[in-house]
Length: 171
Image (cartoon, rainbow, N blue to C red; front, top):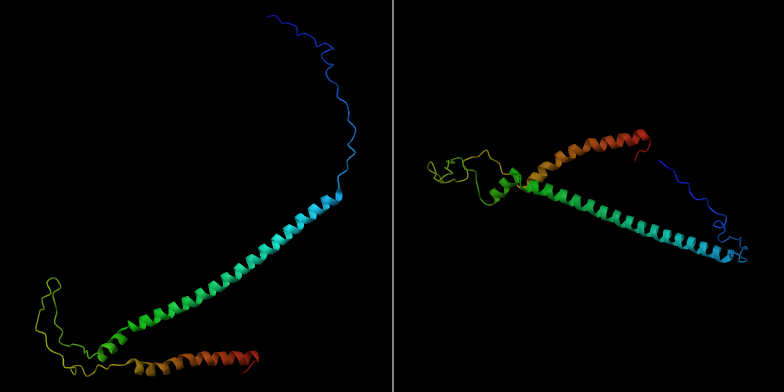
């Protein structure tokens, strides 16, 4: 293998354009306009942050109001569900049936569900067949329930008064 010698660079090829140092520009950066621009950017940022925090605070108050409304509505739904359960109770249905003139039938006869045939002979109910059955209306049931509710509340009131006396804040 033979190696060819590379040509040597001549001094003339190194003589390209020569770089010269330039004189420093005589312009000075104006400090007053720069400071004013920086101050304006900072002021705009502060105003933006103030507006943003105010808007967020107003939204937080609106959310708090909506949560309060939701709580009130949830309480109403709970109360309505309780009332509905009371209206669907056996006692309430029996009292309503009694007011409509319905009486329990001690002579009930079975009925075949497949074809609806009554297996036996139905008898008319007069209303005095079951003298031991008492019908309690809604007014009398609340009158009977009031003493029980007072008895349940009495220990709570007594415990509250005892705790208040123990703390030295007797009423």
